[in-house]
Amino acid sequence: MLIDAISRRRSIRDFSDVSVSDEEIGELLRAAMYAPTSRNNRAVEFIVVRDAATKEDLFQVVGQDFIRQAPILVIPVTDPSKTHQPIQDISIASAFIMLQATAMGLGTVWKHLQPEWVEAVKRRLGIPESMTVINLLPVGRPAEVPEPHRPEEHDPQRIHPEKW
Image (cartoon, rainbow, N blue to C red; front, top):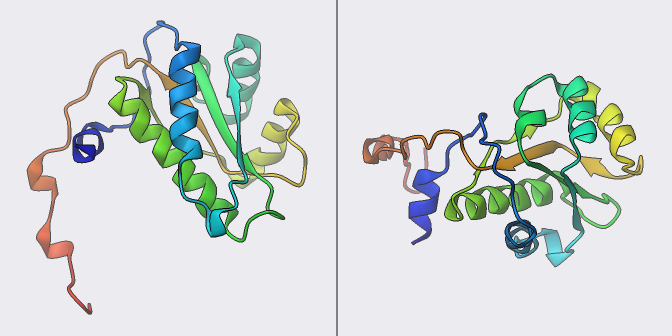
């Protein structure tokens, strides 16, 4: 069941040095391409970075070790002229990658790009100025598998039927 992957999905910031295969990357991207998009525009595209020098370049922008430690980085981008909801489209595709990765025994973390980092990331990855990019997704095998969410984290008090 999907709830199993949802309960096991945790942010991973420490990766083993075991690589991620082309087949695994394909499965992650297939899941992302099945994600819903505004008006079914299918405008989200993906950059997959394996190169250590490129990851080091990106580390110089965002300053977190997991950027260079993860075997791959997936960067979803979209053309805002092709969608009414670029942020939402990228976000849903990213969430699908994160859940698929969990189901496959891989780990991920959402690394939000601060507005002042976006231009540097675009330049380093050759992303056209017109494209929208909001995050990086480091992907790899977790160095340690964290505990899944606990059932008591589901809080019925946070549910408001009909109205607040």
